[in-house]
Image (cartoon, rainbow, N blue to C red; front, side, top):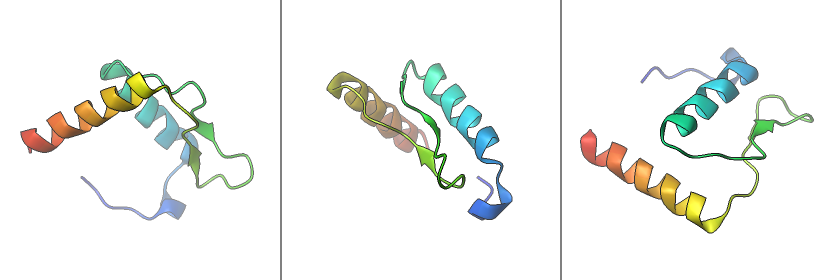
Length: 66
């Protein structure tokens, strides 16, 4: 993974990258968006508990694979 500062990253590209990765894991964050007040933040919004568990499982699997 390449480390870059937040100021170097296009927030909309980061948003689409995150959305794509979540989609590949079968996870949807319905409120996912770039924060309109501070564009260097991505608003994740709220998710249902089953989605939170699915995300936790995907992160756990990724951690075990590395």
